[in-house]
Length: 118
Image (cartoon, rainbow, N blue to C red; front, side, top):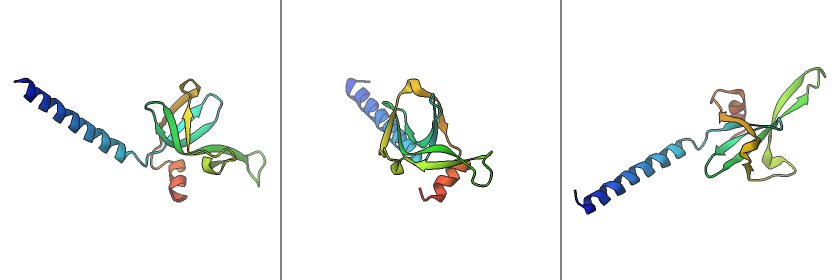
C-alpha cells in the first residue's frame, strides 16, 4: 500500500469511530446517573465524565420528616434549577465523589423524573 491508500484507510476508520461515538452519546442523551459525594449529598442528573465530571439537568435527593409520623423520613427529588443557588451545570471534583453510576430505567428515581415530564 502506498501512503495515499493508508491515509484514506485511516480517515475512513476515524470517520466510522467518530460516527459510532456520536451514536453512542445520542442514545445516552436521556440516561440519568446518581452521584454520591463524600459530604453525604446525593445528586441525580445527566453526567459527563470527559474532560471533567459535569452534571446537568440535576436534582438533589433530600430527606424530609414524614408529616404523619415524625420517626419516619421521606425522600424527595429537588430540581437544582429551583434551588436558591440554581445553576445549569455542576462541575464535580473527582476527589469528592464516592461513586457514580447509571440509574436503571425502572428505578423509583428514574420513574419520578419521567413522571415530572423530563
